[in-house]
Amino acid sequence: MTIEELEHIASSVHQANEKFDWEVNVCMDLACASQGAGQLREALVKAAEASGKNILIRKTGCMGPCSSGPLVRVDPDEILYHRVKDANADAIVASLGDKPASALQCDLNEHFDKQVRVVLENAGHIDPEKIDDYISRDGYKALLTALTEMTPNGVIHRITESGLRGRGGGGYPTGLKWGTVAKASGDLKYVVCNGDEGDPGAFMDRSVMEGDPHRVIEGMAIAGYAVGASKGFIYVRAEYPVAVARLTTALREARRRGLLGSGICDTTFSFDIEIRLGAGAFVCGEETALLSSIEGRRGTPRPRPPYPAVSGLWSKPTLINNVETYANIAPIVRNGGKWFFNMGSDRSKGTKVFALTGRITHTGLIEVPLGIKLWEIIDVIGGGVPGGHKLKAIQTGGPSGGCIPADMLGLGVSYDALMAAGSIMGSGGMIVMDDTSCMVNVARFFVEFCMTESCGKCIPCRAGTAQMYTLLTRICEGAGTIADLDLLVDLCATVKETSLCGLGQTAPNPVLSTLRYFKNEYLEHIEHKRCPAGVCNMAAATALKEAPVEVLA
Image 1 (cartoon, rainbow, N blue to C red):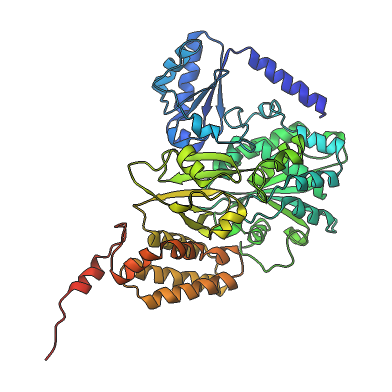
Image 2 (image 1 turned 90 degrees about the horizontal axis):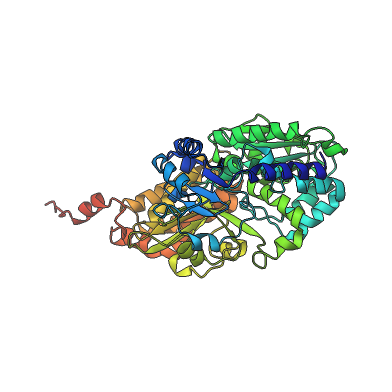
C-alpha cells in the first residue's frame, strides 16, 4: 500500500458516492440502536428503493445528541433529524429534493457551533465496518506519511510539539512518554490501548471504538513505529460487544490491505494488534493492573517504579495510552504539531471528548476545545437544566473526580484548573446535578463504587473506603455526629496518601470536594437530621430525636 494507492481508493469511494444524489446517515450507536435505529434503517432502505431516487443509506457511529435519538443526517443538505421512527422513513425520503420534514428537524446549531471535532471528525460520516469509508476521509494517510517521510524521532517530536497530554485521566505529556519508551532498551516492545472504560456515566471511548475503530488502530501503528514496538494490544471490557466486533472487523480489513502485519507499506516496519477482553474490573483501568490482566493474571496494581515504559508487559518496555489519545495521533501527524497546539489553553492543548449526562437537556457526546468555560458546556451545548430546577453541581472525572458548584461556571475546563478546584479531568465523564441531588448521598454513591471496585491488595484502599462508606451512611441516615465528620476527614487524608494505586489515591475526592463546597449539607444531616434535597431517609433519626424521654424512678 502506497499513498498513491490510498488516494486511488479514496477517489473511487468519492466517485461511487457521487452517483447518489443524497446520503442518508443513520446513527447506530447504542443509544439510538436501543430506540429502534435498526428498524429505522431498514425502513429507509425500503422507502429509498420504492422512491426510485438515488439514495445511499449508511449506518454510522455516534453523532452526539444521544438524548434526541434516533438521529438521521442527510447530506449534502446537512440536515439533522431527531427522534425519528421507522414510520417517518417515507416522509424523510419524500423530503429529499423538496422542503425538509420540519416536524423532525433538529435545530441544535448552538450545540454544534461551540464544538471543535478532531477525534469525532468522522462521526456521522462513515460506516465503521468499511475501511474504504475511513480511507476516503484521509484514513491511514498519516501512517504512510510517518513510515515513508518521517523518522521515529521525527514522529515523537511532532507529538511533543503538539502539547498532547494523555486523555485517560492523568494528563501526562504524550510525547514525553513516547520518548521514554523509545529510549528504553529491549529486544521487544509493546503498545497497549486502554479501552477499559468503567466510570459511571462515561461512554466516550466506547463510542470512538464503535464509530471509528480504524482511527484507533492507525494511532497505535504510528505509536509502534515511533517507539520501536512490533506488537500491540487493545484491552476492551467484555461488556462492549459491539466495540469488540467492530475492532475485530477493522483489524481484519487492515491486515488484508497490508496496513498491519509484516513489512507494512513495503517498509521494514512490522506491527500487529490483538484484542484482549477484560472482565469489567474498574481497577484494570490502572495501567499496571491492566498489564497483569493481559498477561493472564489477576488484575491488581503493582508498585512503581519500575514504570511500564521501562518494564511493563512481560517485563518489556510498554507504551500505554487510552483510546482518545491514540485517536488524536493521526490528525496531529497529518496537520502538524502546531495546528493542535494552537487549540486549547496554556497547558491543556487540543480538544477533549466528554460524555455529558445527568440533569441536562441535551445529554450525549461532545468534543470541545480545552479551556472552554463550564457555562458554555452546560447552558449552550447542553441546553441547561430542565424542568425549572436549578443547577447545583457538575461532577467531572468519574468516581475519582470531584463536584464543582454552580457558582464556578466561569471555570475554564483544563487539567490544572479542574485539579485546583478539587476535581480532575478523568477520561471525560461529566455528570450534571440539580437541586434535587443530595451532595452527601452523591459522595456516598461514588465511595461505594470505589469500595466495591477495590481489588483489596492494599489495606488503606480496602479498609479505608469501607470505613468511609460506613461513616457516610451514618450521616445519610441521620445517625452521624460531628466526631464522625472529623474522622471522615482524617480517613480521607490517610487513604489518599497511602493507597497503592490511583483508585485508592483518588477515592476520597468526591468526599473532599463536597465537604469543600457543600459542607452545610453535611451539617444539616448531622445537626438538624434533615436532608435539604429530601433524598436521604431521615425518618428513623427524626422519630428517635422527637420521641419523649421516659424518666425512670
